[in-house]
Image (tube, rainbow, N blue to C red; front, side, top):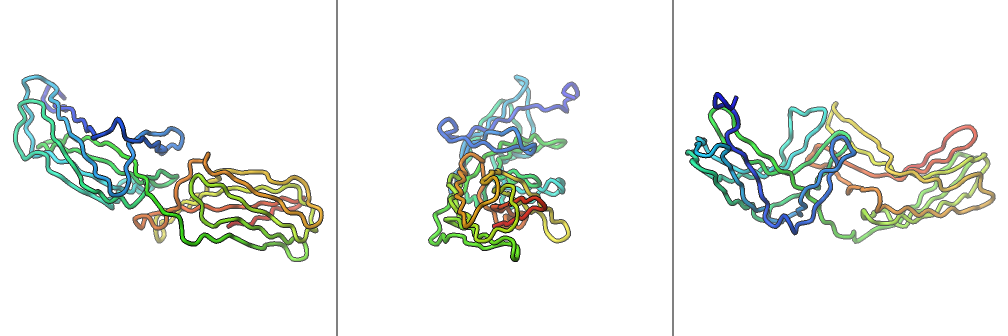
Length: 288
């Protein structure tokens, strides 16, 4: 292709200002195992740097119909990969149509960019922010993309009441559980207690799990994926009398994301605590 003049005639590099000093965030890949490392930005921060367009062959020329850089926020639904939803798009022109006789650099800056959503990679959806440079050509454009990570900042809620709930099976089991708060930050500790008020079944053991529930799509194309983030055994055997079982779960080691509600009208992510009691005959569950 290069012999006939149709190959890529230049290389594009995007260099972000202050990249050496900027924090790096690890973003999970679609496979869920490996983590990509991207520079971290927050809502309202400017994004600036330079674009280097390097001609591959000394003495060659690059004719183009213009060069532009875009900052894009995009939601990708894995079941509908052909239709990416762009919820944010900013464009700056770097060069007007013309001809490059040598390698060139172009400065760019997107000032005080709003970034309302957190970067996210889930089971069925991905929300990403990236810079895209396009050298527009007659036959095929030259394109380069560079991802960034975005974290959103939240303040502590004015009201963060505890959770209290009573559940059971009539004349067989009556329990009450209490958690110290209803909202937790990503490095928080869940503290609670479970009170056994009535036990007339033979309980084998009890466990508590953190469940992540991801819902994507709308209408007939709604997909829900449940993932067990962590599971703890908190009791073996049956309690005697009015026992109380303490709960203490540290969240910092699980790489949780914030709760996400109606993100770009495409998906939401919620977390639940699932209490499971297993007796000799059946499983009893209570979820908050």
